[in-house]
Image (cartoon, rainbow, N blue to C red; front, side, top):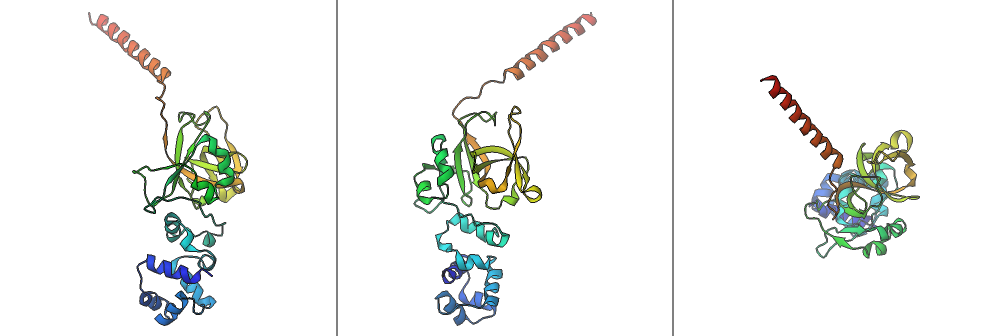
Length: 266
């Protein structure tokens, strides 16, 4: 049973003493000490008090070993995104950390994309992915980078690496924002999202390239979602020839108008 370890971990992470927690729950310090040491278990009413005090669901306190979660997952839990409370399936993200216990950014290149669809929840698979750091990103959030293919998201070019922030609660997806989505059928897709989860139980996916028509996907076909943060590409962008030609024509037109004005003023 994980309860004894969980309440001790949560208490220490909040910087509370046993006296602090015991006073808040209106129990004796010795009683709390017994719970933290596995000597006896609280009744349902007291379990509910622990749940309310820490903002963590009873199921999480009892069933989930919080010590096995990464720092990012614990931060997410403590910010109130407990999936048991929200009634959704628990999404425990497989992740890696560096020697200082800080989250890595794992890189999923195009060759690894097919394997990622099956291994995304397997810690052993995630462990062998190459990792890197982007120092300007928050250390309190989890990021992963994926290589995209195709031209559906132009002007972001084919072969770019797009980095995303892990999204725990899908109800918070923002309309008209870009996300990297792992789906059951199509694997990794990078699209602009229209959130229809509450009303229709689905997402509408849009491409930046107008040649591609939008399409919908049921939310139960989705495995993971990452909010787009930035992209990296080594190719120098092609010059915008249409914009250049238009500017040249406007400049030429201005010269002609100026010449006409000069003649009229003679």
